[in-house]
Length: 77
Image (cartoon, rainbow, N blue to C red; front, side, top):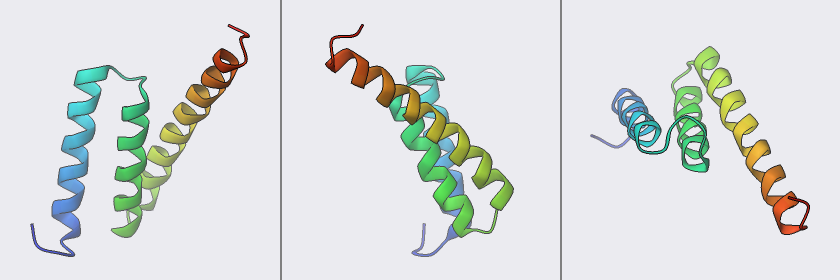
């Protein structure tokens, strides 16, 4: 992959997301990170609709994980 090859980057990020989802299932902090990385690459490539969908899904996961972690740390779970 050459530096600046957006098409190859998108393929790599999509493959990475698929690998992480297979390894951890659909709800895992690593999946959220992979979604956000893919969304950044999509935005850079001008794929705004796909980027927005992946940003929303990744951020929603992050919010759930952070909320659950905060409750655990506070002894509320």
